[in-house]
Each structure stands twice: as structure tokens, then as C-alpha cells.
Image 1 (tube, helix red, strand yellow):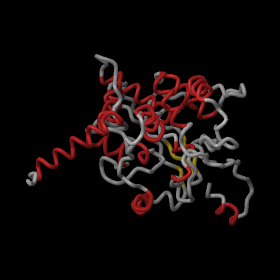
Image 2: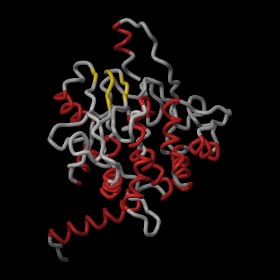
Image 3: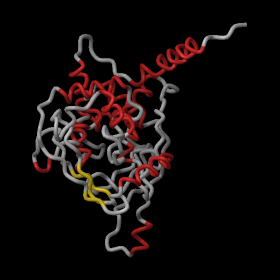
Image 4: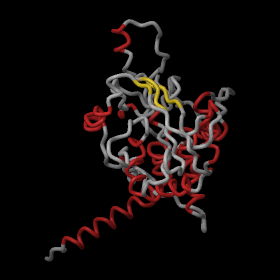
Amino acid sequence: MFVLAPSILSLLIFLIAFSASSKLFSFDGAPGESQVSRGLYLAKVAGCISCHTDTVNNSNILGGGREIKSPYGSFFSPNITPDLKNGIGNWTNKDFIKAVRYGIRPKGGFYYPVFPYTSYKSMSDRDILDIKSWIEAQKPLSEPNKPHQISFPASWRNMLGPWRWLFFDEESTRFDFLPDNLARGAYLVEALGHCGECHTPRNMFGAQKSKKLLAGSRYGPSGNLMPNISPDKITGIGKWTESELVFFLKTGLKPNGDYVNNEMAEIIQNSLQHLSDYDIRSISSYLNRIKPFYNNVRVRPKNMSIEQTIENWWD
């Protein structure tokens, strides 16, 4: 009987963990594909273009200023171009990884979880830094960042520490117990594509109800409700065939002949229609196999009393 030296044991543990996760958390690019072109693909999947471009005012790509509505007020996405003053031009790789995966600002303090680091925490270093390489290849813009317009106590950043202690687990979600295509679909849906940030209901503190994954929410990023996309046959997409779902993700055309609108139309235009067929099928396969939840998402009533308003903070 023998005992491995701590350094050797640590190395073995790392290699085992890496071999189990590398195929799940890093995308295989085409032979000879550059880091920048790979980063563009990942940025499209991750929604960077949609969230950080103020399309309402026809602003420049990644210049920030996109309004994101919530029950607490309006958040505005920041400038993430490589501008040295108003963008992220002087961020190191470590700064970028800490921001994307853990919501930590380069100069200290935390980002609001409207920045979906709660999902991005499961991204690999490689995928995160490939996105950064693509951003660094874009034109720097000096667009100043807009201050958030949110009410107290959400406006008090010191509350983010207790919030994270209660609701944010920094440990990456593992998908390696799934077959390859479902693992890839899970990574696309739950991590990189962060679908749950819009489609999973939240509690009154803004934290996702993770046990009701993708069951729909009344609080979409533009104040619109987000439908139930779990495979529930009554309130979700359980009656859609896999081919219908694949076609919808590519085109925005629902099985009933209607086209999707609002935020989802933009996501299809800026993100989903650019994905490979294999990735679209992986997303569809995963969505059809998650736990179904009955949840008839309804619009939040107007002109409610204070008691009704507090009650309706809960999805």
C-alpha cells in the first residue's frame, strides 16, 4: 500500500475533473478557426450584442444603454467596447473572468444580478476569454454609461453582499451526467444562453426559483411576460414536436403559424438563427426533456393596493 504525494494527488484530481468537463464547457471550433471568430459565435449565443446595444435609439453595437426593466426600476447595460475610459479596454483577462463568472467588478464590489453571472458561472475560461478576444477586436466607443434608475433598497449596493450570501452559489453547474448532445444543450440553455434569466420565475428578492426551471415569468427585461417553455402540455411547449421546436428556434415561427415578437424575436435574430444545426437540435432535445411545470403565466394586474403589490412581487 502506498500514499500519493499531495502534489501528485492534486494533479490527478485536476486531470480527472478537466477530462470530465472540458467537452462540456468548451466549444469545439472548426479546424484553423481563430479565437476572434470563435468568440463572435459565443457572444451571439450569450446575448452580448442584444443586451449591450441600445437598439431602441439605434446606438452602436456594444455601446451599452439598453434599458432592462424590473419590478425595482430600470437597469441600463454598460458600454463593453474596448474603450479605455467608458468601456473595458483596460480590463485584464482575470478582471473579465471575475466579472462574467462571479459578478465582481474590477475595482471591487459586485454587479447587480441583472448581469446574468448567476448563469455564466458555469462557462469555461476558454469560452469567456474567446468572447473577450472578439470584443477587443471591435471599435472602441466613448459612450458614457447610464446610471441605473432603481428604487431603495435595491439601489443600495451594500445589499448585494447579503443577497449573494443567500442566493448565489459560485460553484459551476455540472452537466457531465448527461449524454453528449443533452449536456451541450444544457450548457447552451442554462449557462451560455442563460434562458432561465428570463423564463424562470423569481421570488420577491429577484432570485430565480430554480426548482421551477423555465416555467415562465411575468418580469421580462422589457416589462413583458416570459412564457413557460418547460415541456408542460397545457401551459408550456409539451405539445410541440422536436422538429417544430427546432424550426421555431431558427425562424421564430410557432406551430400555430404566428411569429414570435418582442425580446424573443430579437434573440432569434441576433443569436439563435446563427447557431449550428447541431447546437439548435441540442437545445431542442434538452428543452423537451427537462421537468414539466404547470404555470399559466399571467400579466401583472394594474392599479393594485399595496398589499396586492407586495403579494404580486412573487412570480
